[in-house]
Image (cartoon, rainbow, N blue to C red; front, side, top):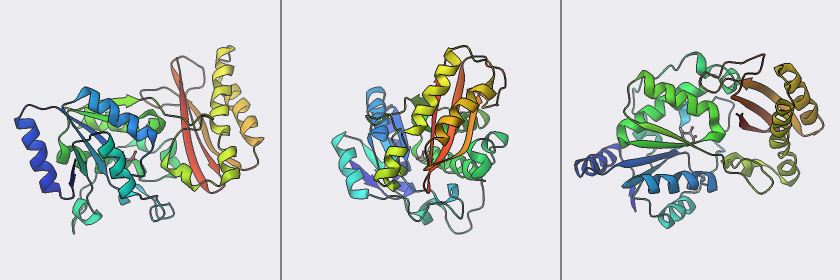
Length: 280
Ligand code: PAF
């Protein structure tokens, strides 16, 4: 497994792979890898001749009061996991390699990045779109793999690829969950024991929303009310949003017309968690 730290060396490898007519699968990450990331890597290994993983905690997608400085790091552990999966290359640039002095060009993804999580995380999705676009130009993949847990991110990336004519397939893979159904996330490591138990309320609320839809609720406000009451029964939980949206556009709906995605963001103590469920 090659560990590559410069853009030039990464581009040289990608060009060589492409000239040998090898397909490149790419899994962009911010490290602190868990089973969710590894499931994306396995899928890429199955579907491509070569798999590249990036590890880069992207400063431009964090707000000034967010957890950029505390974001978990475990380069050695990550490299062990990836070499165990026979990944071909890991791209691990420093921030000044990705954002040179005078860097000034950014992507503005528009409205889709300002709703749901974007309403409280101003500029977050522009930062994601900018770094993902840069990574696409550096790694030059044929297929890229993202987890459904970050549903809004997957819609943003699909829009970026369509709007800017990238010839890259975006593959969205199922959310990987712990045995008590909490969605795997690097940020789960922030939770203490009590908070970790409380965090199971997110998935319970999503299943409650799904059950309400299954029982024929056709008004989103009824679904939202039921989910809200359940989350409020957990003292450590504070709701940021609960929305039922159309999966392609993320537009909020009032009357249910399936498929829909139930999305939520909830703070457990100081940790902000997100999750979602697609209801067909
Ligand atoms: O999902 C993530 O880990 C990040 O948002 C990504 C896609 C690697 C961009 O920094």
